[in-house]
Image 1 (cartoon, rainbow over the protein chains, first blue to last red):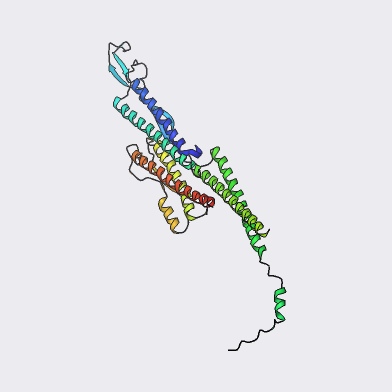
Image 2 (image 1 turned 180 degrees about the vertical axis):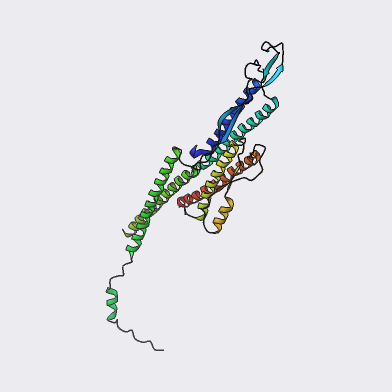
Length: 135
Length: 102
Length: 113
């Protein structure tokens, strides 16, 4: 950061979007993780992002300030033949919606690629600055 | 038409001839060039120290715009070349004059 | 030589374009941050005014875009940012070339003869 500020800022974006991708991948991988009704369901992970505010003009970017967890109740599904089913035959599924997770996956991926492109262009610009007077 | 006889050389003439020749005011021009070269060298010092200070800021991550450094460095470099060129030309001109007088 | 209007104008342009690049990076990093308002750097008008009144110095100013946001309040438009990013890069190269050209002319003048 500092001298090549745009690269550091875009780098912070890469970090947050990667965490988001990781969280969504984890959610999707556990979409069918069954738990007994006595336990909490698998809780989906959401990254809470906040912008880094501009003190002194050279900072900026985004940071993950925390992780929010989805519903612990999940969905009760009637599967009496499942080994983890309780006396009434229910098990707990996570409250994770496939389509909304896919939408988030695309958003996170787009965000990641956009920041990578910014780094590339910023690198070009700083390289141009370094050619002044070189002849 | 009658041609008047050549009159004798008047006594006033030798006085003008024996007067010492007027010296050209060289001292003013010399001082002028010297001071301008000196101030150019001072300016050069200032530019080089600015350029060094910016270089340090750049490598410690303190410089907000990298072009500030490259512009200052190029200014110092061009000013250095200019000062060197002026000095070389002055030396050449001086040598030229010395050759003429020998 | 070094203090001419056009020299100052090129330097001011490089400063403002560098600021714009940073602001674009900030917008893109926050493309999904809820409530974030995209920022813009204004500079070209200020520089034109400064030059017409005899000075080459102008500073870029940052404002927030008033475009309507999406559901989460974020109004960053990625396509706008991409176009602006490429535009900024090209302008920066242009200003760099112009500044470099001044130095080249001086050097060429010294080297002839």
